[in-house]
Image 1 (spheres, one colour):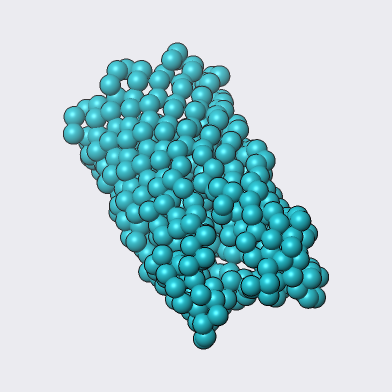
Image 2 (cartoon, one colour; image 1 turned 135 degrees about the vertical axis):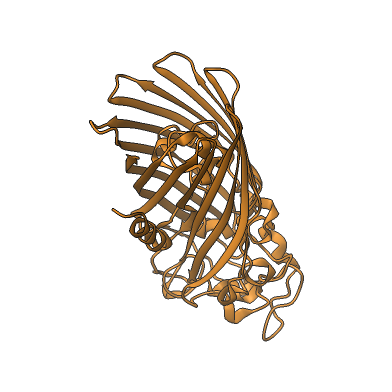
Amino acid sequence: MKFTRVFAFMALAGMAGSAFATNGYFSHGYGLKAKGRAGAATATYDDAFAGANNPAAAAFSGDRIDLGIDWFSPIREMSRTDSTGNPSFGTPPLNGSSDSDSDNFFIPEFGYNKMVKPNLALGVAVYGNGGMNTDYPAINTNCGPGTNLLCGQGSLGVDLTQLIIAPTAAYKIVPNHSIGITPLIGYQRFKAEGLQAFSSISSDRANVTNNGYDDSWGWGVRVGYMGQITPTVTIGAAYASKMDFQEFDKYSGLFAEQGDFDIPENYNLGVAWQATPQIKLALDYQRINYSSVNSVGNPSTNFMSCNPFNMPNAIGPGCLGESGGAGFGWSDINVWKLGVEYKYNAQWLFRGGWNHGDNPISSRDVEFNTIAPAVITDHLTLGLTYTVADGNELTVAYMHAFSNDVSGPSYFFGGTDNIKMYQNSLGVQYSWKM
């Protein structure tokens, strides 16, 4: 399989495949080996996904191609109890529950690494950074036949996909220490459906919902360091800038800053310890600064400073689409990733891990997050790699994200909203060593 054909396949498949919601809307890991270790990868160098984890790792990874696909199944539910309605917005009492459809997604990943000199590596990774998908079917509510639990017409939900192309260069400044840089080229697309009720608090009511897919391109950079400080201990660090994307013009009345939706800055620190010839431990800390992106971090309660009765659009600093407009209210999160590997023999290597991250959604913002219920905090992972006779590798990884829910007030309908989610994923990757 030629490199150019693999790359083209990834670029096309990745645009249609992402639907994450694990550490916020970031994946719990990148590359199937990392996913088997709960995402711990900052201080490891056993695949070609340095551009997604730590660019400096490419200088230690050797010549290889990694091609994988992950089946991802998020199970999401929303409900409302004790609703009283809201006469100010003309909404009737509205109790009920709904499960999101579209529970199966296939997410490809691709990495390529080449040692062009003993101390210089070039490569590229193509991967889904993250995303969010919900699809709550229309039901017959008090708002009328064929409406949803937010009183919109038809099905309710969003579809956000984020694809990253990450070319990488890494250089060993001395034999056991390297630095790396990865320009990040991002593509994302988005659509929203069934949010007609939110148009009343928008500064651009024509561009809130049901406008089909819109897309945008963005740019950023990731830099990293890796050092083998003893024969058994490796450390790593990486920083990714906020990725600045073009606005979603078709949803300029939904997202803050006239449709802006950037990927937040994030950084990670890691250490790996080869405790015995058979056992390796890896620990990562990751920080994701969601609050730095207004459309994600602005409190949803900002809508209270919006005048919904102005025509043709609402006015006020908190109206949807304004710089200070209502957002999802996500807070910055800390993520801890602990992984272990056990090398049984020359062919079999087994993995396991635990990933714990903060929940970015507070009770204050539950109503707005019914379409993005990223409340997962804990993940258990398992994995293995089998090395075939020619040295190539087959890797499998499984993840279970434990159920979590958050409840909070419904400002539009009265009563209490609840959002809930759990997840499973199972992926396979084949690696060619060159």
